[in-house]
Amino acid sequence: MFPATGTFAELVGYRPQPSEVDVTHGTTVIALRYDQGCLILADRRATMGNLIMFEHAEKVIALDQETVVAVSGAYAKALEVSRYLRHAFKYYERLNLVEISAEGKLMEISRALQGNLPAAMNGGLFLPIASVYDRRADSFGVFFFDAAGARFQSADYATAGSGSERIRGVFEYLIRTKGPWGMRSFEEVLLDGLQMLDIAADLDSATGGFRKTPPAAVVLDRDGVRTMTDDELRPNLDRVLSPA
Image (cartoon, rainbow, N blue to C red):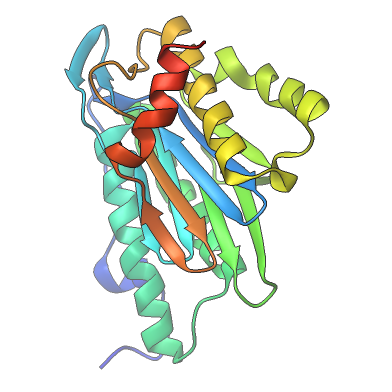
């Protein structure tokens, strides 16, 4: 039986612990709206200082079939908090016998980041971006957060990680030249998103490129969450790496 009151964190005694100074970090992640949903892209490199630790890190995490986060920063801490959030969503629904709303999910993400602040100040900083489908309103949203849990909504895109600063202005340039992301087709948005991720890899040593390891690409639409296969990505990766 679940208790009548209390949060999931109180139930399980969740207290984020301070991290060691040397932690494994992830880098460039991107969330883009398109006309039927959201596309989330991430490189696969994890680094620790100037060392490349892993080239197959999974930085795009589905919290449920309507909520996807992409994480940058302290990788282990991001995975820990993401697992916590998955269970927190389920706990809410079982306790209240009703599905948690999109707003409720975003509040839980902010609350988890607030709880992680002491760990963030000791090297466990991570910053997620979130793509959410609000079934009640039949609308998609892209959000980003600061370390204290403050939430910001972007009309069409969000990016985080060390490579994001190198490409931030490109998003606005493409909006001005090609139109809002949310009004464009999936194929167009996918190609431009991969091009920006490739630019970030060229300008940021902590962001992995495509030549050895394809990036992660996850689609959130009205049917749920789907991970694109390497074979699906390959034609667009070839276009990015070998432009005509």
